[in-house]
Image 1 (tube, helix red, strand yellow):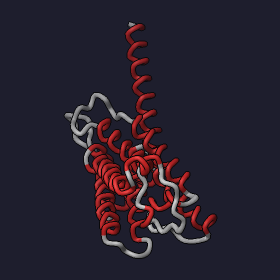
Image 2: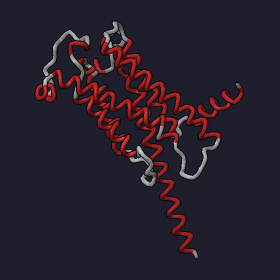
Image 3: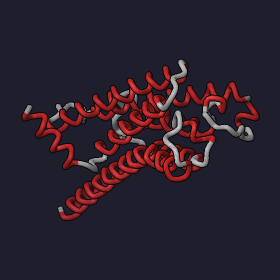
Image 4: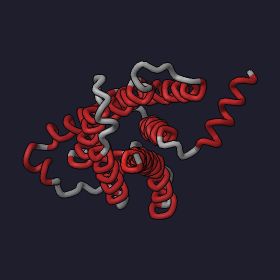
Length: 244
């Protein structure tokens, strides 16, 4: 009997540690996402003594390249390592969506945007991919990877994050979090459409940068909420909504 209880206790401990691990990965992904545009803006203010560039991708052709590429790689690594709950086989699975997002993040870093649209005055030496495939192909790959990345993040918000255990119905707290995930998912979709349009139809100023920034912040917030890192703020929002 004691052996059976010990086995159950060990199994529960393993389950708790697994849940904690998932929460930590989600928080890391969310915080890295939100910090990316913040650090790029600080770089512009401190190093360049100017405002934000025309787009986040334009920082590849500036001294902020390490911030951009490093953050994208970090996000890609964490997303690739995130498997979600393996026993949940509902499609699309967390593992598939997270790995598509990971490929998108790393792909953006490897295939920079068109230098001519970056606003940089000094033409850089071509990257390995640009030299191998040509700048035209690379810039098109950049767009494909960006859509893959943000599309996967929106999928998490609108589908995967809203799931609950099969055979159960979401309680009040889960319903409110799903409400937040829907809002953040729609924000990602709208902003993605906006910055794609802003890239195809050149809009002067920083329109594309802010559209990308809002999409990335929405992505970061969704993972932080899923990682239960701001439970107090979420509960306050829930209380405010219930009073209206």
